[in-house]
Image 1 (cartoon, rainbow, N blue to C red):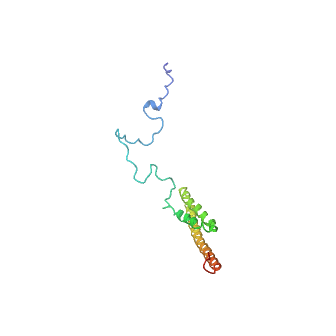
Image 2: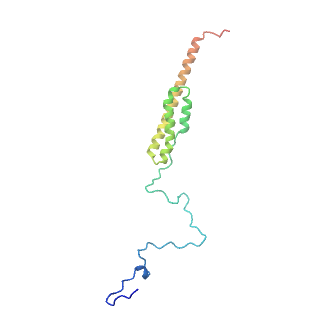
Length: 151
């Protein structure tokens, strides 16, 4: 390189040439850990990242009433008229968990109540219909038989 002309000054050195960073630095780095050690694990029950922003603990999920809905379907096998109530009860019972996992607490509560109500109504109606059918057939059978069976 050639030397600058005596009337010209040399350009100022770049900041990194003076030992200063070119960009402002953030907070200092964490102290170095000894070789072979790991940071302590997070407290029990906390994930590595913690709950998401805006997360509100909604408590325990509502009951799905799956067992009640399935029992209602089994009870309604004899009286097929109540399947219109008991099959939707099973459908709503299986929607409770998926809605709860998606964060739709109101939808899960609504599906839970619908499953319970439809299953109970279906069981009651099925029992009443089964009793009525039994009474009707037993009355018809008793009315047609006038005496002991003949061989």
